[in-house]
Length: 96
Length: 312
Image: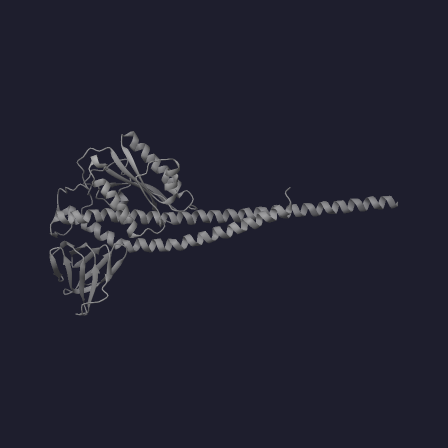
């Protein structure tokens, strides 16, 4: 997939199933040391996350939120993986 | 020669059984599709964990973690046997039990005390009947194990492993499970899960025969230089137990697929046997009917002859 420079591949996976995957412009995650925003071409990072909400701004600008449990994220070669025990799409997204 | 009535009733009961076997076979094959889907769904997560562990190991030259290296001389080890809840699966449970017994004997010979953990009702009843001490058992859903049961099992075993020897901790963990190779072939495997060997499941076959060094990380690929938050050790503390849980879940899933497949095979054979039996019995029934007809004819002809002779 020719990833354009201003988007990145995002995979959100739970223990029992893949939750979401697609291209995104930015993702905010509840890292253990405070919320963290990840933009395309971030440096490789492995970070623990706590219970909270992962918000993905998709390539077309729509925002999608996921409630997640504890887990971790890893980012390398423009690919973000969010691995958590359980995750569901937020019932009540916080708007844009 | 048995009476025709006896043959008829045996044919009727065998064909009723044949229908049951056939239905069981079809149920098993529909479960296989489900089991395969569950296994595929769980794969992205275990891949993510595996990549993260690789990155961590590549980053830290000398990984010091009790899950990888335990500096304690403790003869107690844990053995987890994955059996099935229900029978009708051919030799599935009995080969697991045989392999478990082998392992227990082997461990016994090298002076280890094995603690037995069993998943699956068949295995539990086998050991209960023989009055063997079992440390803990789980049952239910062996043909479709959920994340919850994997969590429970791995939590129990990790607790046992992390506990100090004085408090009944164990120094190693072995898992005896059946690997799903394909629909026809299922292999019983013994895997040494703890202390961790950082190699992929496929390479960890002969863990018992030849224990690899703990840092058996041969296939190091060029992993990007990660930064870790909050710190590499903290990430390791969280990711390694998850990795264990993922591996245990993987074992449960492949065992479930193997169980379903061997059940399907067993039921297929049973259906074939029932059909063969029905053919055989039908042939015998026909022969016995023919024999009785012939006998009647002979009797009629014989008596007719006798009457004719009297008239002469």
